[in-house]
Amino acid sequence: MSDGALSQAEIDALLSGSDVRESSGNADGGLSGDTSVIESFLKTTVASQSNGVSMMTGGSINFSGPYVSETDRDTFLTGLPDTVTSVKIDFTAGFPGEHLFIMTEDTAKSIASMMNKEENITLDEMAMSVIAETISQMAGTEITALSGRTGNKSIASASPEAVNIPKAAVPLPSGSFVVAVYDVDMGNGAPQKIWEVLGASTARAMSAALNPPPPGGMGNAAAPSSFPIGGGAMNSGGPQMGSGYIQPVQFPNLNSQSGMREQGNIGLLMDVYMEMTVELGRTKKLIKEILMMGEGTIIELDKLAGEPVDILVNHKLIAKGEVVVIDENFGVRVTEIVSPQERLSEAG
Image (cartoon, rainbow, N blue to C red; front, side, top):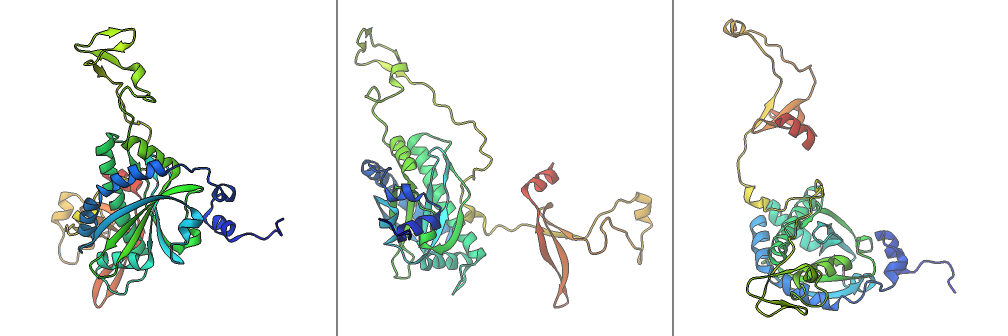
């Protein structure tokens, strides 16, 4: 009989927001067949992952493995250090469901140091954004490979959310789930690991798409609505051998995907120069007024004294700031980042 105290497993589940009743059981079991399919697929992506992350960081990073298995929360947490960096990047379309990457603090610091070209880096907000972008690159490579293998062009993921937290607070799926363990060589002689976690429903859907039943086999939902064409004859038992088939057209999901993040390698653009301009204000003058200007003429602008100045990149407003003086040079301290909606309205 319980004395009313919470067990460690229940405390861990509450910290992560999981349902204790679900996480204590194994309602999502039976994923062993799916793990082998997912492992075979992920092994084909490690070369692309290595190239993509190496290009982003400017270093030499090599992934190997991964080794995929079915596990649960309690078992998985025993293999993690007390504090980890977690990047949640759920699938929003294609195989919608839970998806996250986990790494040790040392691995996160190594990646952030390589990206920022800094030593002894701390995992602050800037470092977390770098880690999130790295994981976005990995997820993008995976989505590209999945789309190529399955023909599903609507696969997408949410924006990554990177945090450095105690392992008990990692938002792991409830019940059983799939974990892929990558060995990572960053060229410093210290082997590291990155864990990729897939919720049970996501893993099953991914496995089914990667390993569909053969045409005409049991469980093939498209078979009854297929139509024979070509040189095959039809009898009461169905088309004879040699018949061709027209399969139903699979249309992509046309639902709104405003929250989806287009995956890409932003690292390719990191060394591109762009013109940045700080604008104090504007005014309109007649040609005759402009021709009358001379030394000492005062031009009144449309900005009030003390009002933020506009910061433009390639003539597009991206931020506002205040003028400062640094060692006798003018500078601008950013006080506000313009929202995407405002940028679009400016572009219009």
